Image 1 (tube, rainbow over the protein chains, first blue to last red):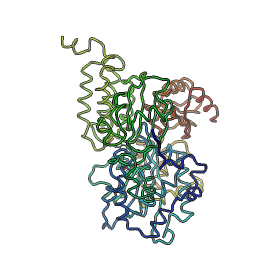
Image 2 (image 1 turned 90 degrees about the horizontal axis):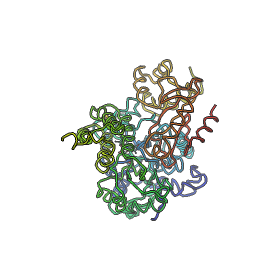
Image 3 (image 1 turned 60 degrees about the horizontal axis):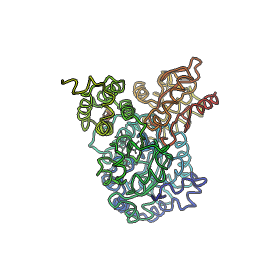
Image 4 (image 1 turned 90 degrees about the vertical axis):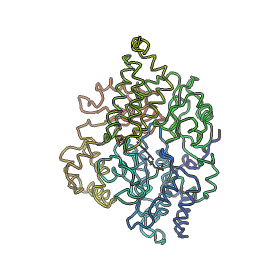
Amino acid sequence: MKLSNVISARFDKEGSTKLKGYREDGGYETFLKVLKEKRDPAQLIDEVKTSGLRGRGGAGFSTGMKWSFVPKDSPKPKYLCVNGDESEPGTFKDRQILEKDPHQLLEGVGLASYAIGAHTAYIYLRCEFKQGIATVQKAIRKAYEAGLFGKDIQGSGYDLDVHLTMGAGAYICGEETSLLNSIEGVRPYPRNKPPFPAVEGLFACPTIVNNVETISNIPHIIKNGADWHAKLGHAEDPGSRLWCVSGHVEKPGVYEAETGFKLQDLIDGPCGGIRGGKKLKAIIPGGSSSKVLLPDEVAQVTMDTPGIRAMGSSLGSAGIIVLDETTCMVDAVLNLMKFYAHESCGQCTPCREGTPWIVQILERIERGEGREVDLELIEDLASNIEGRTVCALADGACWPLVSIVKKFRHEFLAKIPAAARKEAVTA
Amino acid sequence: MFSADLVTELEEIRGRFPYPKAAMVPVLRRVQEEKGWLDGETQAWVAEFLSVESIEVHEVVSFYPMLYGQPVGKHVVHVCRTLSCDVCGGKELWKHLEKKLGVGRNGTTADGRFTLRAAECLASCGTAPVMLIDNERHENVGPADADKLLEATS
Ligand SMILES: Cc1cc2nc3c(=O)[nH]c(=O)nc-3n(C[C@H](O)[C@H](O)[C@H](O)COP(=O)(O)O)c2cc1C
Ligand code: SF4
């Protein structure tokens, strides 16, 4: 299992957060070169498109494609919003970038803003990132002092203001339209789409929302070229990603690797295998909102969009949650459903009412008071939630739920009293 | 209500946006740091500072878990309850703290020193279990570590 170091290359360097060190390593050269040569923004967007970069926030949409949706002829100001809400259970990679290499992100902000024609960028961080906020705030100040942001940057005629703003502990604010409402200072309910943010986003202006890690890839792509990026990892989903491994492994942590590796190799190699020599029971591979994989699926799956799709799951935010044989899957899914029930913003009835119902049913099963028909009831509820709501939080709740109930049905049944089994009820 | 220095800082935050209301969350977070929680008087002050109605501030405060519309203890302790922490010692940490502080979820100790709250995923799953004390993150926290951390918090 080969690890890579594109995004994480400078993480462990002394003074990795400092502007001086970043520039000594060639940092901001790409941004300044683009400004100096007055590169055509449309050509930069094409470069990102052909690089094959997909968003790292969860949905995996082509970044260059998204940028190309910004109307060129709009008289309105355009905005870039960097999504640093990072609240998807099992995900802890963006925080590493914020705390360890903030200038890499800021150079990406400069390049992305230039490409889409924005003169204001907001970096939105969850307020619990105390260290990340302090580090990024300081980096922004240093970049301004060095004339890298502000008016007429280095005489190029290009103006860019970069500001930090924050959320206050709500998972939903990571959903891009909720994030926009959060920045606007209203209740952060997700918006109906269309209009998509690229057309009508922040303050009703064209806006691009991208994840922290997505934006951090931009300096590398513009510096090394689209072809360089397109050759990293899997051809259909290229790039080098930060994978977050948590749960029952010997060495949890963030590992960078090019797409296309075998999940089993990451677990057995860098992660040191399952904790205490125990057996693997299940892996939730793409943050909590992805479908669960069984050990035989883990043994086969490759970590790239086509590979994981073939196993019926998704890469999501690359949060790999490893559960060993000691885990009770009823307990695990109940834990996650409490998360979604708590985080539902309450706007749509199926999500607001449905997620707590599921919690109640699972609690009943957990207490030994469940009925076998409850398992069908869960599936029925899920099918009435999925796809019927304003945002994907509700879908994200249903995917792990339904897949866990299906693949671990025996564990649920084991908690259901014999008298409440179907044979007993129908007899 | 606030020192000239703090008001200057808040004005800088307000200046980041095309209109004042957009400074809502960062301004509320900053004044909460100062006051502990967002009482009616503080919310009214923020409303005036951002040129909005008090109800607009209240709508936001009442939405976010990390904006406190109710009194809290001198220190707020958040323990992550989400899956990766839960299966790596989070349950035990929570039980230990409930017992040690003698309070349940959202409870405040009789001496007003600590409020105990559960947090959803804190983006530190690789170093579970995780807790925050006054928004400072602590990782790999066993019960004995928690005792030490609380003792060191005055
Ligand atoms: C409930 C929910 C929570 C989300 N949380 C985050 C998040 O914390 N960070 C993030 O970058 N994207 C998150 N997303 C995805 C965003 O909506 C959006 O797709 C992403 O920020 C786009 O950036 P990207 O194309 O660079 O991935 C979330 C989506 C949903 C539905
Ligand atoms: S699906 Fe849930 S979280 Fe999303 S908008 Fe509807 S109620 Fe809110």
